[in-house]
Every structure is written in structure tokens, then in C-alpha cells.
Length: 307
Image: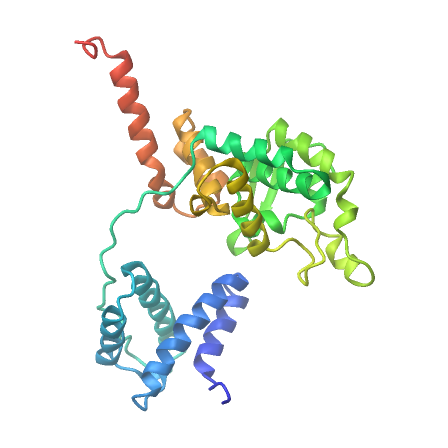
């Protein structure tokens, strides 16, 4: 059965790609959420761009009845709000059916992160892995834990970033925004060792030219190590390190980087810049670490703490 076409969804995605520089992952998420809504309205003989407020509420009720997490429902409503704002701005309709709708209340979820000891265990396990594959995995870990990059930023790092002896990485992040991230000596040293064997990961033939742009070159179609493959490697490494594999992922290591920096006295604004957060409120999910540090400081240093 042929997939139905939704021109207004396509127009919206084209706008997000051309004017907002949305990433492929962001566009895929929007397409999935909006297409599901379009199927819902289609069963009610309505195009998604023409849906009214009651139909949108009906869709949100259906999500709730399915038992979807509040965070998922909130994300889908956010996608609809952006979509209808675009439809109104383009002059197709005057009203936004989502304008008076609020998303479900979300509890503040604390970021999951590993202890410093557990990160050391992962690094030691990577060092025990033999050959070029082991060295590449070690470099991935060292760079990720040293910089807190998003996994998509990590696997697509250009080779040119490391062809100069600089303690700072220039990262092309979300929305095409560049930021500078310090790179510590252990990570720099690991990269230099890896560069000597990097060519062993290059594909042959025409694909070599595309892959040669990336630090973590690969025979994969993208020309670089994929996010999914790196995630798999981390799960395998977790088992070797004696850590529950369910607790380990690239994003957990990004959280670990941020949490450990704050626990050791880093400034929240500086962390915001390194993580590439557009808004400080996003970085504030890590303030629980600062609260723990302050509590420990009072307990250890206050003159009445031992009484």
C-alpha cells in the first residue's frame, strides 16, 4: 500500500531544513510525529493542516489512553505547535488550534550518569582491547568524556579538527552553531596515537574520499562510524568493565562529563557553552550535583557540623 503524501508536512520540514538548519535526526522525529497525527486526522476525513482544536485534543487523549509517557505526549504537542505556527505564518489559516493547549506536566528527571570510578573502569576496559578497534574505542571514550559532545557531533568530527596541535576543538553543533571546547592532554595523546592507524578504517574505492573527511572514518554508508554502532560498542565495553550495560550509553557519558565537572567546581555558564546549550535552563538539570557538593561542603567545613 502506497504511503500517503502530506504536502503541508513536507513544506514544514523543508522550512525547518532550509531556514532553521534542522538536523536529519530532528527532521526525522518531526516527520514521524506529524505523520502519525495526519493518519489520526485522516481517519476522520480531515487533512492535518485543517484539523480543529477538538481533533487535536482527541489525538492527545488517544495518546494518553495508549499509555504513552508524558514526555512523549509533550514532544508530539510541541511538534504540532510548531507545525500550526508555520501554517498560520504561511497564511493558509488564521487560527492556531494548539494556541491554548499546554503540554502534560513533566516531573524533573535527574540526568543519569556514571561515577568517576565507573568511567575509569570503562577506560581501563577499552585499553585492554587489542588492535586498531580497541584503540579507536579508547579514543572515542577519551574525547567524549573530555568534551561532553553529543554523539552525533562526536562521530562526525572532521579529521581537520586534529591536524593542528591545539588544545581546543571547534565543534559544529545544533543549528550550525560553532563552539569551542577544551580538549585535555589524555584525549589529545589518544587521538595522536589513533591517527597512526586511522587509515585501516578507510573504505576502498570512491567511498574513500567521503570517509577521509572524518576522524572516525568507517566503511559505513555515511563514511563515518554510526551512532548506533558506537552505542553497541559501549554496551559491550560495559559488560567487560563489570557495569550494567543498561546504564551505559553515549548520552550517559555526556551527562557524566557535565556532572563531574560541576562536582569539581566548574561554572554553570562555562558548562553551558561547552555542552552547546542554547538556554541556561537546559544546563540547570545538573544543579543537583551542585546541591550535593554544597551540602557536603557544609557538612565537612561548618564549625557546628560535627556537633
